[in-house]
Amino acid sequence: MIRVVLPSHLRVLARIEGEVRLDVTDPVTQRSVLDALEARYPVLCGTIRGHDSGPRRAFIRFFACEQDLSHEPPDDPLPPAVAAGAEPYLIVGAMAGG
Amino acid sequence: MTGVRVLAGTRKGAFVLTSDGGRDRWEVSGPHFAGWEIYHMKGSPADPDRLYASQCSGWSGQVIQRSDDGGTTWAPAGNQFAYDGTPGTHQWYDGTPHPWEFERVWHLEPALDDPDTVWAGVEDAGLFRSRDGGQSWQELPALRGHRSGPSWQPGAGGMCLHTILLDQSAPGRMFAAISAAGAFRSDDDGQSWRPINQGLQSEGIPDPDAEVGHCVHRLAMHPSRPGVLFMQKHWDVMRSDNAGESWREVSGNLPTDFGFPIDVHAHEPDTIYVVPITSDAQHFPPEGKLRVYRSRTGGDDWEPLTQGLPQENCYVNVLRDAMAVDSMDECGVYFGTTGGQVYASADSGDSWAPIVRDLPAVLSVEVQTLP
Image 1 (cartoon, chains in turn cyan, purple):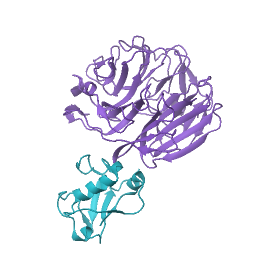
Image 2 (tube, rainbow over the protein chains, first blue to last red):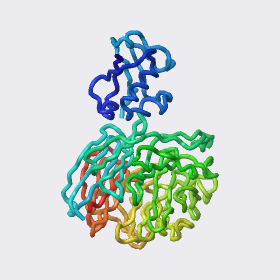
Image 3 (tube, rainbow over the protein chains, first blue to last red):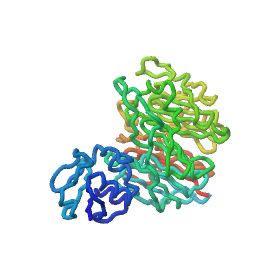
Image 4 (cartoon, helix red, strand yellow):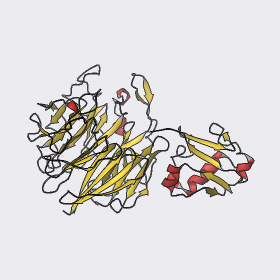
């Protein structure tokens, strides 16, 4: 079970409370997690990355296990702790004011 | 008519303001989509309970929301706006080629006769249409693909298609305006387009009377007289009496002819409204006095409307999509400001009162007259 944490504005948009828990078949990668997330919540398509598994939106970042994964290849395996459900995969809106 | 519903899009959410025919007591609902920019909301003329909203953010891009119950509840619709084919380039601010990139939906225009059909004007300038209630969107590429497209360049707010007017008397005829390309007309439901900018004069472009390149801020039309168009250009208020074939200036005695919105009285096709703004560098009213100007002669002769509006220390702006009229027997006029006020006049502009004073900056105002 993969745990995913979304920024508040996307939780509101998708009507999600708390963490999302997803079944993702191996290999557990950023792409496979996002594919599963968008399959469950189609409204998130285009809000995190481009449609059809497109590039990450500029002001969205991906963190896990205290690492910044934003620039890692999307098909690289996620850390074992994420794949095991011990740590969440964090989808974060870049900090900005206004 | 039972009342009016004002749809206010702001920098931080959407608000729905409703009143009976008296228009002196208002119920305020919102913020809907709190924290998101709502560039525009509009109701279907064919079904007043069908509303569309353009919701966007710098983080997460574009979302389209739809309501089937007059704004009480909303559901996300489709948000995939893909240009047709390889979109090529337009000019960037410095004149260099820049790829066409979808940024946001500026304006939603529901069809006159079908609640499931809605047009979208987007940045970078393009025209899209949905025929399934906003679930899917297809570009009508002829406008962006006009031979002049590679020479278009953005205005300060982005290269936005901000105005879509549908002519109910001539099926297939529609008008669009792009900042800063100009005005365009289609006579075949958007399948082909041509610029309609003859008579415009714009400083700041190499050829002041060029076919395209004019920063048109807004077009307006009265449905009973669709051959007459009014335009608030970057500078100059303009009028066309031949569906855009040519334009003449009608700025007349305005204190400044810079501004953003322009609209037409619901029952008097020659009564028009603008909000003069000091200049392109000073986006606030002259002398700190918020004045709507009304012409009852289709331009040239203008009168200031001040009753109920702040006449000192007012430095807000009124954006291009932030003025609308209702069609009650006594026409109501509405506008929103970047200071978060939505003002209403229930007497054609003679007097004004704020419906709300402290919203986030208002990006758009539309009004529905409810049956």
